[in-house]
Length: 179
Image 1: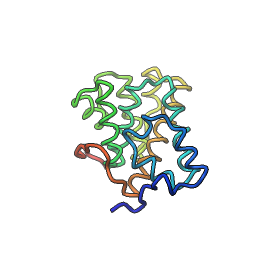
Image 2: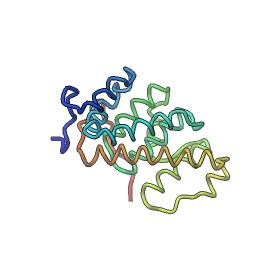
Image 3: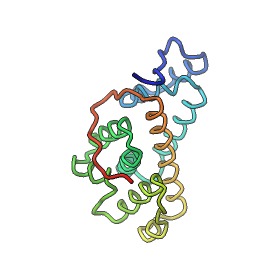
């Protein structure tokens, strides 16, 4: 049972209910339980959705965004995040092998691998390699966008873990070795 139940829209506060009504129809497709759990707090919901909108407009690209999201979810051992981002990554054309490699912070592409390893190491409290990111071509704006993406995912995963949010889409197994 969830520690924090998703709110029913009719019980949301006036501000939150109005805010939910303005969401695009697809905003609740994959992360319905997360969004409705965050809806208990207008502040929490608004913070998450504003960051999500900003991150989705970043120069990182949707494919890398989902790959990093998978690496972060795996590092945090967040089943909810893994399920959501595996589904989204599949919709973007990533293969099951690509998804597994992303979870394990692996990629044949050096630029992608640098971002995945940085995200994993940051979440695990290891010393992330800024030098490796720089060598892979990440400039200051891209580094800051990557940090925003990692932070957004960390927040969403923390909520999912603490609230014990029920997965509302297929969940893959946790497989990567985490320290």
